[in-house]
Image 1 (tube, rainbow, N blue to C red):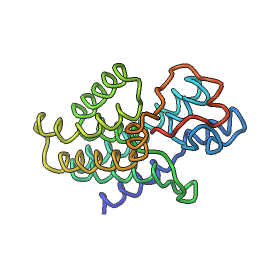
Image 2: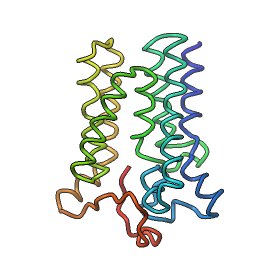
Image 3: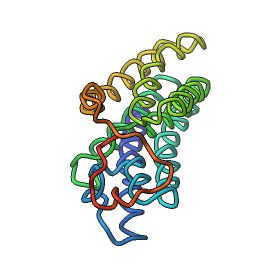
Image 4: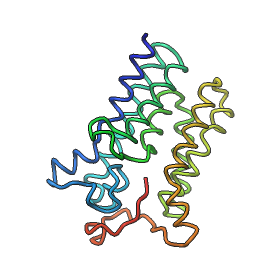
Length: 209
């Protein structure tokens, strides 16, 4: 019963669409009509820069971390991965947007792993930073980082639920980036700019995470 409560809490936390709300509050606009149309932190950053993108990213990480960490501490790793997975699901199909398309789960997955298995979360974040620094493709960094999660879980000796969660989370992130993979293959994927570009205001940026 406790695990079920954490799963419900995880989904509700994941459904907190911070990117959408921050843009609504501070700019009076709908992020779904800007850039890629995605409500995740990457699109918020592309369109509005770090002033809104950074808090959106931090809050997306936090909503994965909080339920996963609480469930892991109170019950154990098995409950933690279920709560973290529910948070990711909520981010993808948020209740508060009527189950319409949300984000691609990257930041929320990172937060969930920091809560369940901090070493795995930190290693995955390190992979993301290195790959992004080398390529400037947020999508490539997200895919490579997510795919590395089960390996790190195994290397650091976490129990099988964490390894399985890493595999499932990695597969989910890769699946949601399949359009990015197709654009990469065609040479059409845009590199990420840390500073906002004016063209992003008008919706020309391709979808990332």
